[in-house]
Amino acid sequence: MQDEISSERASEAPQAPRGDMRRDGPPRGGRRPQRGRPRHDRPKKNDVSGWVVLDKGVGITSTQAVAVVKRLFNAKKAGHAGTLDPLASGILPIALGEATKTVPFVMDGRKAYRFEVTWGVETDTDDAEGRPVETSENRPTREAIEAALPAFVGEIEQVPPRFSAIKIQGERAYDLARDGEVVELVARAVRIDHLSVIEHHGDRTVIAAECGKGTYVRALARDLGRVLGCYGHVSALRRTRVGPFGEATACSVAALEESTEMHLHPVETALEEIPSVAVSRDMGLRLMRGQPVILRGHDAPVGGKAYATCGGVLVAVGDVERGELVPHRVFHLGGTAPQRN
Image 1 (cartoon, rainbow, N blue to C red):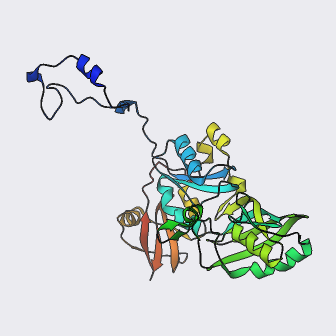
Image 2 (image 1 turned 45 degrees about the horizontal axis):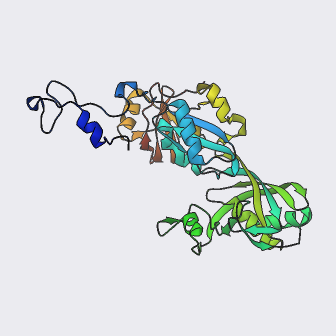
Image 3 (image 1 turned 135 degrees about the vertical axis):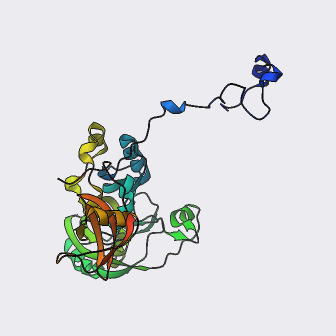
């Protein structure tokens, strides 16, 4: 190992006079030598805050994508708003700095997908990476698929894929499945707002979907194949929208490598679906201390979620209760985040 010294090298080192050494400290008159890279050579992390709408490519995990963006911005803190499988491409919103406090608002937003289903084979992962578990020679017509879709629209019960990140007694379902354990996941309620056929070519169909939090497109393809009596799995998947973030504002890693600043969106972009209120400096200071403030004016929200700005800068988000804004998250932005024009 790098930190180990062989006995031969140790014996060759000159011995310091005993009087110049302390038993539990560095040599007198000097500092303890630092291991590794000198601290003054380490690049200082940027105190940057905002959202990056990354168009993630196929073959990279969401965690790897976050690491790339964090490195390009040299940011102190980063996280994503909703995992996107390595086989999937599309919108992966990444929060930097203070924007990480608004991640739940994005994750609770509606999502849109465009995915391809290959008919005739069901796999244990419900996608193209899995092992075939059921096969069929039947192939559905476009008319049959379109007739089956309405049953999957609205509030439905859906059993998540065996290979998913859902925890079972503290263990991820995909870890248990990979170890060969029988994974039994219970159905849970999800909401699907829209389904439509975009293309149909014999054994492959491209479908557009709009859905809520917790919906698995892989499970949708699996269940649709069973209903049609032909089996099926997702062979391609692209996420086109997450909450307020869509393809129009998305950027690739290559675009970020050319310029980071032009692709950084304000923290409050994640809060577009809730009302905002402008407050005075004194009210802003109270909110920053976690204290509620009374909202006045005929435009003030009367209930629900809301966020406050002071001088155009986001200061807090919380709940409006009996005419007061009670802050649940406060922000320390100053000049660290982009502002709206």
